[in-house]
Length: 211
Image (cartoon, rainbow, N blue to C red):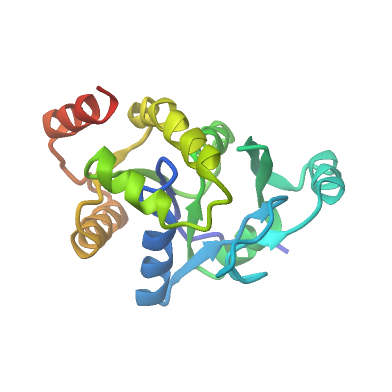
């Protein structure tokens, strides 16, 4: 059977705490044609996370089996846990004309781009408005101790340096405004056009965040 995979693939990435997961959920909630690619992970669920909705929580042995069978589009080890995007559910959504949202990091984004997939693929990188906001967002999570917060803050600068690998950069200063910009980007891409954004403003924000 030949599948007509007409859907678009939309990668949303950000440093930890910048808001990509919240944005992906909002995009899916407000747009019936958007489906979230639910990743597999070996980490322990946070207190508000639901199996099969936020992630598929599996052990490391099962994860390694999926790697061996080449079942993932991409996978990576992040903060001592594995994350991976399974191919089959994504192909199913695309074959029904759905646009698939990927909540993945820069490593996963790079792997997917290297596959040169047939479907249209766009990538969007989300930045926090400032370091204080980022720290506050991370502090409000279900963190075991301050060492986890410190680890994520240390990783932040490395993650931000990959911004040039993305098609678009959006600053998440206000959730609603950020959502509207992302929707404008997607609408432009569907029409075969490029959404124009201020590169100089982005560069200034990057310098401010990593200084």
